[in-house]
Image (tube, rainbow, N blue to C red; front, side, top):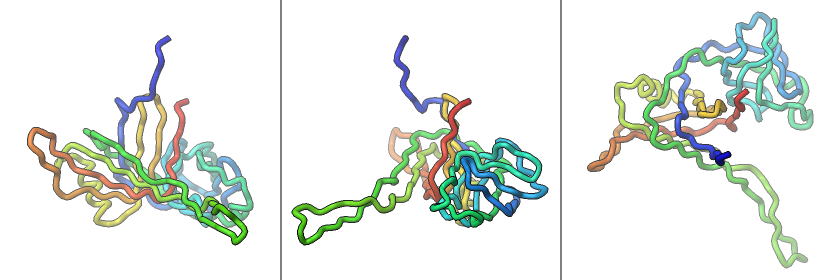
Length: 218
């Protein structure tokens, strides 16, 4: 059998073009995935949600709704089981569902940077060598190079989000069926790059507001 390698060829990138209204939840469980209580909600299985929560580690992240039932739904892809990190009863907040998407077409490059582990250096008088201990990670950023298409639907979407500095979601659908959600703030260069004998391109920049979540193909 021939070896198979993960190639991005055939991947489809989308950006949230329309968001719904906030749906408040009055409780969020310590579980994997956590279950939200929202009386009379209209969330459906598979909806992509932007999360606001009293738990800072999950706020401004994008997740998929699962196990939807009357007055409850789960935030698939999150793990809030640790009560040391997620104080019980403090995760109350709201979600906003993505109701429409625009395809970011003719992508020529998709680059993720950041996320490196940072360290604090400590040295004691009796030490010959300094020590390092992990602290936080650098923020993640995405750079998307696209062919210049001023009339494409996504362009006005990204320009509007950039002007308003509004949080949004990008969804990458990989050819193997996996999906990755990237929550963040987007902008696009106002003028394309122009070089003789090369395609004119613009760059979409994304400053992530939280870690991406990847869902494996069923």
